[in-house]
Image 1: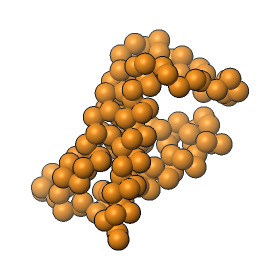
Image 2 (image 1 turned 45 degrees about the horizontal axis):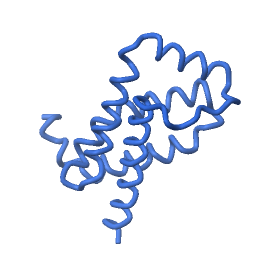
Image 3 (image 1 turned 30 degrees about the vertical axis):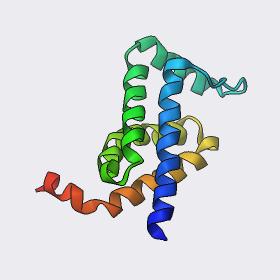
Image 4 (image 1 turned 90 degrees about the vertical axis):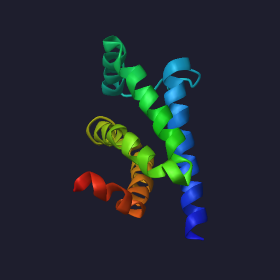
Length: 125
């Protein structure tokens, strides 16, 4: 039962990040009009740099794809981890009203990391 729940959570997690990454390239999801000013400034800053959005998008797509299958889930978690930290810091400092979903995604990420801790041990030796 645990494996089925973890797979379902991993599938949703992976698809969410694949969707987010693809949206950074194709802009198919509308941007809400009632975004706080600080969020708009942050988005404009990322877009003005030019290389940040594509880099994050590629990390999200690759990490999301790796996160879905059990065999590569541990690697996907490592790829997504820095992006997830950035998302959490952004929501904590700039948009705390939208913190619920990032916390839920972070909990899934931590579950996968803890569940695969033995795969990370060689990196720590």
